[in-house]
Image 1 (cartoon, rainbow, N blue to C red):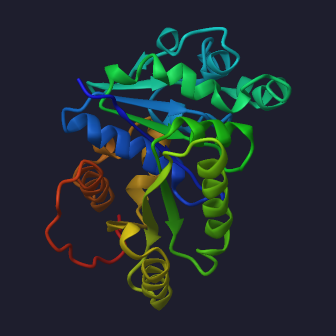
Image 2 (cartoon, rainbow, N blue to C red):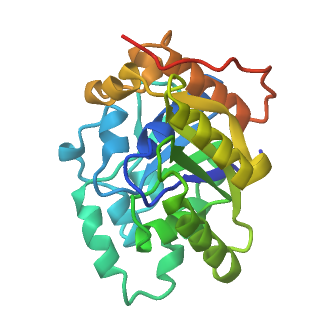
Length: 267
């Protein structure tokens, strides 16, 4: 079996659909019969609760893995989707940044932890925090590539240049194999000129790195985490669900036919 591909979903700007994308990409890769591990590296633990696991009941989390108190396989939890496993997070993870400051090889804690398990998975998706601290650096050092969600809004590219600079620094100094997996446009509303302008601007800026799939603004996508479900289990017929299924196909290297430009999803 070939080694699993490790993709970090990353944008230090909040509100870009980062966790929504991590959960739903992982879910649809598993639905496509891949064995998938979703690693929650955000102290807010939204990927944990959005996958149906109560973050307040978590006793073993990625915090214990980063501090090398446990192997990652000891914290894994199955989800409602066969083949999708979760390495959960909780608020304890906030302390990891401080506790690891003086630790030797602190940037590689997650990389070392995942090295023992990557042969057991086809894909490992890491949800990183909305910051560029030590947790995110760990996520970038462990990854083969970075998936960058970009919201279709006025200042879309403003924060991305800072992230790309960080990716370059990590590539030059810590993880020479790191690459940009792709840029994912999120929260699109094609009824507005702004969305069309942002789509064009991002495509011009990143050339061939932008996914064909564009994630719409979607009530169903917003509601699903509050039920602890990926959108595939909450409303598989919604436009948001279909788009994340398309994204999973792109990540797996399946060519999509020309996708229609679609308006915002309603009720």
